[in-house]
Length: 385
Picture 1 (cartoon, rainbow, N blue to C red):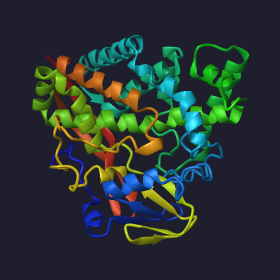
Picture 2: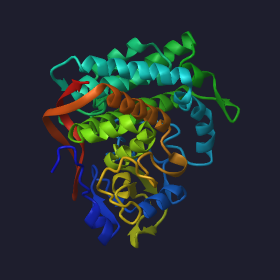
Picture 3: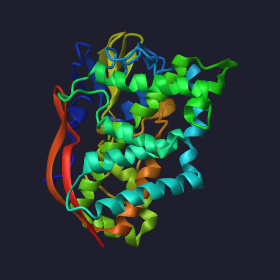
Picture 4: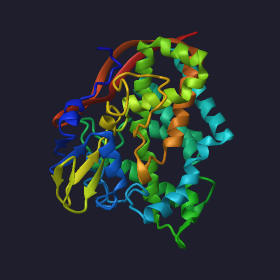
């Protein structure tokens, strides 16, 4: 099997039952696996809520490492719509020409840098740098701030043993508190200042609400972007003809971005809390238990996708749910798509080939499912044209 391949470990359970089971810190989860069921549950916010105890809808649960509600991620309609309307224009800024050009400059500079090196560890020396530097644009703050975020490493909420770590998470929370205080004293054109001056339903956001938006902004797009970039580089290393295709047919790039995100599904799943006894996939779930919307499984559903376990760069029909679905569709999707779009074009133009020198897979332990989500490390050489 190719190193870049990402097997569908959910296939048997998806076909036979439509759901799976896992225990998460003694708070069990029923995993919804088929695309139709995932979309149906994601849309049904009355039975499957996001506005539960802060941290509980995340899998693994973060209730032990935070009590701040991430906004609008952990808010249900109708309040969700009001918060979303406030922040959505800001998160659409990656479509602006100036933003896009600055992002292109960042990515091109990083690619030029790694092309001069004999060996690059993709996660720490490429993907983390790319993600952190791009985040300065999203927050509209100085580029130099990325150096601090890079120093935190890839897993802001996890210890070296990969367990959730409240002390490590506190580094981020304390940092955000400090930046909110600075923005109160000296307002600017950054996201902190915008939120502090904003109102929802005639009320100014509280400090805790501002913090909730900022925690989501930092954490929501960190591991996901890193996984998407790293997995894509591994894929191009083993499929140099795909880089050639993107160079010769640049109009395919947008479809290629969607396909790589579908295939790799950087975020495996997201939870919801059941509000009343009900059924999913003809399986009973009780009130105050959890389900998870398994994006990674839904994106391999053969009832929807032809050749679901292959990367088809120019896939024409691609209703994937890698960015979520319904009202909780990923707020940072525009930013992530721009990163991937510019990255693919830059690699196609500047990189002749990529050699994988060494790698170790990152396997998520989901009880009955052991899913490769990316890499612990990926050592490569980028070869210049």
